[in-house]
Structures are given as C-alpha cells and as structure tokens.
Image (cartoon, rainbow, N blue to C red):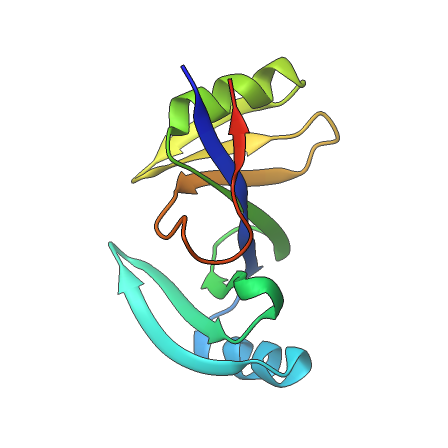
Length: 127
C-alpha cells in the first residue's frame, strides 16, 4: 500500500530541570522565535518558529542524556516503520502517537503523524 513521508523537523532533547532556560538558549542560538510552551501528558515542550523550509523545531525536557533527534512524518506510521526496517532500522517502542526507531548507526528518531502535507516540500511517495 502506498504511503507518503518526509523530514518533519528536529527535536532538541534536553536533560534539564528547567525547560524555559533550555528553550531560551536554543531560541537565541538558532535565531528562532519561541512561540509556545506546553505539556503533553507529562512531557514538556517549547516550540520554536520560523525554521528554514517550514521544519518543525522543538525543545523537549527529557530524563535521558541530552541529544538531538529528527522526526519523519508519514500518513501511515506502520508502513513507514516497515519501509525503514527494510533499510536496517529497528522499532524501539510505540509512545503515545509515534514510533521511536533506531537507525543502523544507533541514532534514535521518531515517525510521527503527518499533519500538513500541503505545507513545505512535497512528501515522498512510497509504494
């Protein structure tokens, strides 16, 4: 079954007690406006705006070592996970509404639901 996917953006995972300080740093460092701080089922995020190519950039408070991970958005999460597994990735776990994946290189990334396929660069079409 055909599905679509593309790079959605980057999440800056911060092992910190203060999401505001972390978000202010990354906002200033990247020259991106801080537009929203919110809580999603206990997870804290700060959204940054105006990234190149309409990429989604957020700062996330985490309890693991700080790192940056990317999100791939798709209109079919399971089909995209299968496609990436054929390339060598593995599924780590399903969290809330997305798959946490690991590349053959050890990098963690997520597959998230595509929200606005009409914005940004056109999604890739996969058979």
